Length: 387
Ligand SMILES: [Zn+2]
Image (cartoon, rainbow, N blue to C red; front, side, top):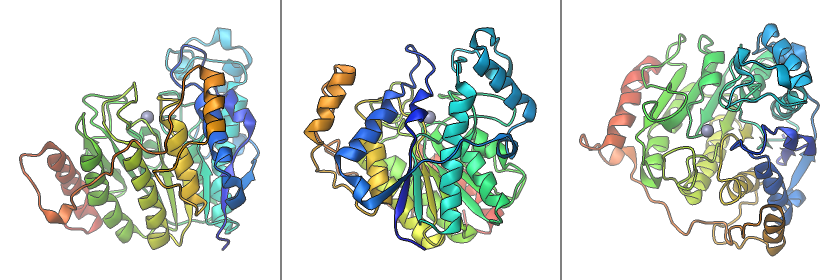
């Protein structure tokens, strides 16, 4: 297995654009790509462009009638009427929607194939992670579920155990739904509590048809670095140690950040980076190093997303960027030219996150501890673990 990492990128993915009033501004992808270049990460990465997925791959997750509806809306966006979730405020139709969505899915499927074949140990598609798309409908800014498609492709290639860890602030509902009954896939999602955030699912009691195949940690609104890291480490490593995945697929939505306008967690860039590093280590510890890392949500498109996913890519490339590093001046010039905003100066929020290990004790009055324990009680015994 090569030690090299692969970055999936085709400039055309920036055509995934719901319009100027929509929060998912594709400038977040453009600026991430430029920041990766500005740090010279290409020396340690292969940049690869995969083909768009075709209907036979889309059908591994999506219904053909839905794919046909996306194609029709893509050709005539003015006629989308909200059926299949297309033509809604969250998912407006746009020309070329089918093609660019299939292209993003192709990058995630290509990443999965490269890792499965052993071409590279790690592959990153930060344009992917569109985890809300359902088998039969668009949802939450997501048309085709590239994360689920990558996992489905791994299964098609013969994988028997794939773990999916989703740290986006929103519940990874589409991926959970796609593999609800499939014991070969363990889905773990850490997200803001469904009472306060879209998509209002991801309760700890959602454990899947296949004995504990779905795991949900519903974090209280306002959770910051200490709670987020404590929850991650109290749940994810033990489950991966028990499940022994052949491949680890992770989704790194950056919308947990305190500056994110659409959600209510208070996580720093520095904690996001620590979780990225933890995912990298866990892939080596439990999945023979096979790691497919995806992007996801993230609506602080200048301040947060490019730095978060540049850290992710650098970790996958084996050349992590120290948090204290300065952001290259050429990149800040590009940020200003594109957005008339100054852009951040450093690769840190200036904090050094600390957290307490779960073994260090449980506080029954603490809402974060209550949330973690609810998950462990709901699912750990189903997997033969102590709650
Ligand atoms: Zn999200």
